[in-house]
Image (cartoon, rainbow, N blue to C red):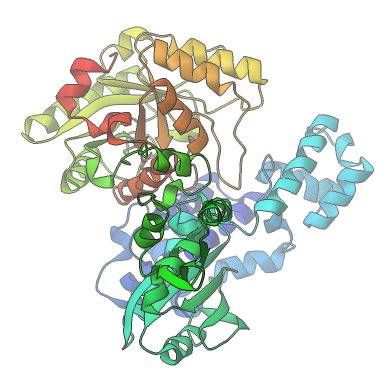
Length: 573
C-alpha cells in the first residue's frame, strides 16, 4: 500500500512524543518534531522521492538518519525505532497526546506516579479525584482535562484538508485514468472547504459503472469494504477515512453534484424554495409535476429557481439564498488575486529555509512581496530574534532586495504580545520594520476579559499592523482562547490594524463567521500561510477557501494589493 506524507509525519511525531517520555536528548526530540512538520507540509508525496532520483536529504531538516527512516517506512510500512519504543511503553500513551493541555511532561508524571497508560485509565482516575491530588494538577486542571477529553472524542474522526488531499488526489487520479470516465469530482464538505472533513464523497460520470466500481473497490489503499453496489460503493482507506463513490449519468450530473455537495441546510432551504414554486429537487434533477426541467449542471438547477449560481463555499444556509435573490452575492476572492504573503518564517527563527530561498520561492509564485516575520526572542522554543539579530537580518534583506527589481522582501517580525499587552520588542526597533505582526504564544488560559484587554492594548500601539492567528486555535488540538471578538474587530478598524486568516490547515484562524463579520464592518483581513518552509507557501489555497467561506471579496483582503498601495494607504510602520 502507498505511504502518505501524513502517515510519515504522524510516525515522526509519535517517535518524538515517546522519546520525550523516556527522557531522550531534547535536540533529538526536536529533530523529529521538525521533520514531522517538514514532511506534513511537503506538496509531493515522499514515496516518489524514494522511488525516483530526488534526494530526501535535500529537504530542510532531513539528514541521513531521518532519510533512512522515511525510506524504511515507505518500503515496509514501519519504522524500527517507533516499533521498539511502542514495545517498551504502553501503546495507550500515544492516545493521551491528542488531548489538549497534556504534554509529554504531564503524561510522564501521570504514567510514573499513577500508572496512567491509556485514555480509559485517565478518565477513571480523573473521575475518582486521584489526579487532582497529583502535584501540578489540581481540581481546575482536572476539570479542563475532562472537558478536553470529551472534545477530543468528538473531533477524533475529522481530517484536516491537507490530510484529505493526500488520500484523495491519487484516488481521483486513478479514477480519471479509467476508460470511459468523463468527469470525476469530490463533493461534500471538502468541496465547500470546511475546515475539517469527516468523510469523502466522490462523483464519477462514466459510460459504464462496472469498471469504475471494480477499480474503486480494488483500490490499493483500501483496508475495508463497507458496501458495494451497481452505481455506489463505500470503502475505508488506511487512516480511517471513509470514501463514498457514486457513478452518475450526464443528465443528472449537476443535480447530484449539488445534492452531495450540501450543506444539508442549504439543500433543505433550496427544496423549500422549489416547493413554493410547485417544483421538486432531488439528486436526479429538478421537476415540475412529471416534467423534468433540468439537472445536467448545477447552474441549470439554480436558473430554474430564478437564482444565479451559488459558489460551494457559500452553501451553508447563512443568507446566501436571500443574497442570490437580491443579486447581492459577493464575487469571491481567488488565489490568483494574491500579490504576496504577509506571514512566513526563515532560518532566522524556526523556519527551514533561508531568506533568499523563501524570497525566490515567492517570486516563482508570481508574488510581488513576501514578509518574513521571524519570531521575536521572547520564547526560547522559537529560536527568535533579539534586537541585534533583527538588525542584522534587515541588512541581509536590503542586500537581497538590491538584486531583485520585480520583488521585495519585507523587513518584519512576529512580535509576542506579553500578558500585560506590551510587546516583546521596543518601539525604536519596530519603527525600523516595513511590517509589524503581533501574536499570542503564551498564557492561553487568561480570562476572556484579560485576554481581550491584552490584545486591544497591543493593537493600540501605532506601529502594529497585523494580529496573526488571532484566536490561537489548533484544529483538533487546542481550542480558541476566549475573546470578545467584536471588541477586537472594532479596535482593529479604529486603529488601522488588520487581522489575519492563517492559511495553515491546522489553524484556519480566523473562522469564517468572524471573517464575514470583519467584512460587514469594513475591516480588511490578510490571508497568510505562516509558512515555515518554501513548500508551505502553497498552503495559501486553504486560506483562500476559508476566506471564501467568510464571503470575502478581493477588495476585502489586504494582500491582494500591490506593495506600493500597501505602504501608501494601509500599513502603520
